[in-house]
Amino acid sequence: MTTAAAAGSETGRRYPANFDAYHLSENPLVAVVADGMGDGPGSVMAGRTTVDIVAAAPPTVAGIRAAVTEAHRQVSAFGKRIGGLAGCTLTALVRVDDGFLAAQIGDSRLYRLRAGLLEILTVDHTMAWLGAVNGWFPFESSQAAAARYQLTRYVGHAGAPAPDVMHVDARSGDVLLLCTDGVAEQVPYHRILEILGSGTTPGAMVRDLLAQADAAGGNDNATAIVVQVSSRP
Image (cartoon, rainbow, N blue to C red; front, side, top):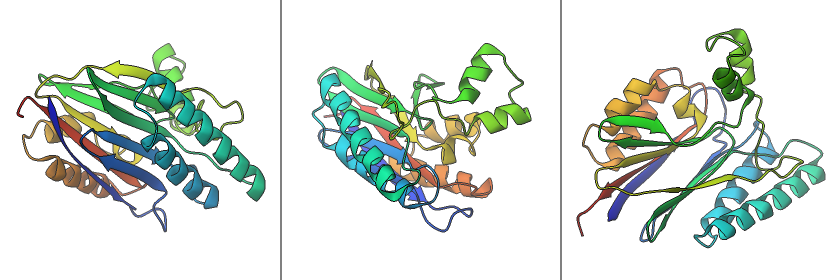
């Protein structure tokens, strides 16, 4: 299996700067996105630091978990130093011999399009996700909207929660999307499905996803990495 990938990020219209961070390298593939919490120095530091640490980690479950532990340590220490919020989400995808390892903490997401079915492979670590699954409130209610901002896990959390780490098999024709909530919350499911199924290049898909987020209002920083899996040598 081989992969082709592209990444991009847009500031949007709500914030004066981009507090998302990402890394993409190929051969082997390492893709990481993070979304800083808030719009202060703790947001910038958390996102960039976490992405850099995880991108450099050994491509093993133990390596990824150790990297997240170190990111927790550095981000938490920075928050204490500045006396303010320091934290971010994390979604990562790294190539291994028999597919990929994915890591998740927070509400950025990993999607997979396979044989016409678009699935979210990760779980949002938010009260909104718990509420939707357990029927605590209607999905479009004001309670659900507020709960989307209540993260149960993030890098920099005082409890240093562990990430979800899972194996993702690779099949020729798969298209994978890592994105921050600036994409997931603004681009509807069926539009994401249409873009990832368009058969264009990863770069074109990323540009289209970011354009759609902007057209929806650009209410958040938006970051996307698209990975195409192929059997071509």
